[in-house]
Length: 114
Image (cartoon, rainbow, N blue to C red):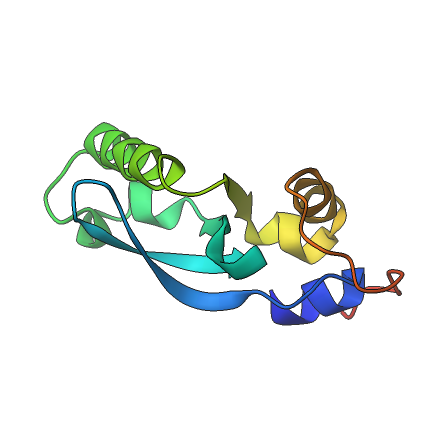
């Protein structure tokens, strides 16, 4: 993510940022920009389909819990962006999401690092 943001000309995100929700619960988020006001979460299918990662829960229970977590974060942050690693790798969807969220672009984009 750091390399792709640099390729696209955006400020580097903070990594593994803790967000405290209104109910006092703390959530560790993958990335943050703009002093923590814009949160980025990298998604993959594995946490929904791998039984070892679901800790005995059904896939739909994991999805519902993730939705509740995101709602709690959205209550205290300006934006929550969700993207896949493919979005980051190809760049376009990540670029559009960062622009829409107002993440500062420090310079013009350059060819993507492969």
